[in-house]
Length: 135
Image 1 (tube, rainbow, N blue to C red):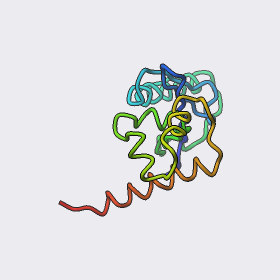
Image 2 (image 1 turned 180 degrees about the vertical axis):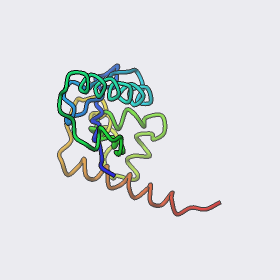
Image 3 (image 1 turned 45 degrees about the horizontal axis):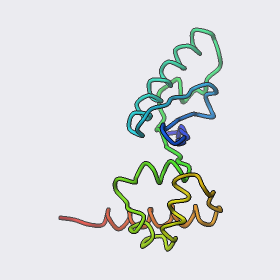
Image 4 (image 1 turned 135 degrees about the horizontal axis):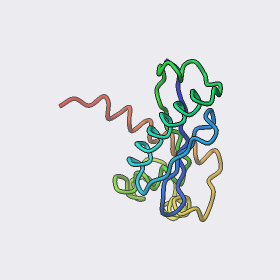
């Protein structure tokens, strides 16, 4: 199954989503959950319009045989999970100073690629640990 990459961004009040493979297919919403629902609707609308206008689309999209993968930028990821992870908790798993995490979340500073990788790696490791738990 092919992956359809959905880019998620955060503008300070709203989350946005766009799909580079489908130019013009965009969505916005107050919450990440709603932007995911809205981009799904936008994809369907985009496909119907492309078919009607005879615009070319990748076969895997037309067949519906794809999975949506969400690519978060650092700002949107930190804001998406702010109700779950405190800056203190993120500092413990990433080793990145709380104040710096705050700056990243508010767009005051842009993390270097090494810092982005550090955050992603820490979250993936946490996910792996959580998947190994049985109750």
